[in-house]
Length: 230
Image (cartoon, rainbow, N blue to C red):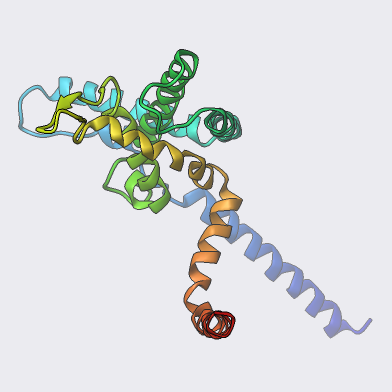
């Protein structure tokens, strides 16, 4: 090998070595952003009860970290999906809008409601409720879950009134128990539990505007054949 080529090879190795050293130095000298606990330790202000407020804030941070860890586990997703599937099967055997269900189904409904409420509380504590990029109500599927759980809680323990109208017939009127009809939407909660299903549903909803022309043509065909067959 020529003398100048040997020097060039040495120079290339030297440049590679220098770049590796620079990358290692950048990793060592990089300043990581402080997390919430570190920011809390150095927090200072002139308001009273600083230590008490810091202790409460630290407790809330630990609760948030614990709930976030729980909802990010695979077991939590699988358990939630299994609960929804079992609840859906039980609703197939019993009418979810029935105001006088069988006592066994009523007890099972109470258990499912506790599980759904616990899941919602864990997600709210771990993700935040309204504020933040990953807040609970920032997801449309979580809003659906929130409405279903709240409607079930509102109808809890409320029986339809047995009022009598002017004609002598019972006039039940409006009752919070009528919100039990929202139970039929519970199988849709699998959309928020199964991430792949959520992506599929979003893709289908996004594709609906593109199917407008196709639906118009099909509607025209159906209208034509219905008129011809009448």
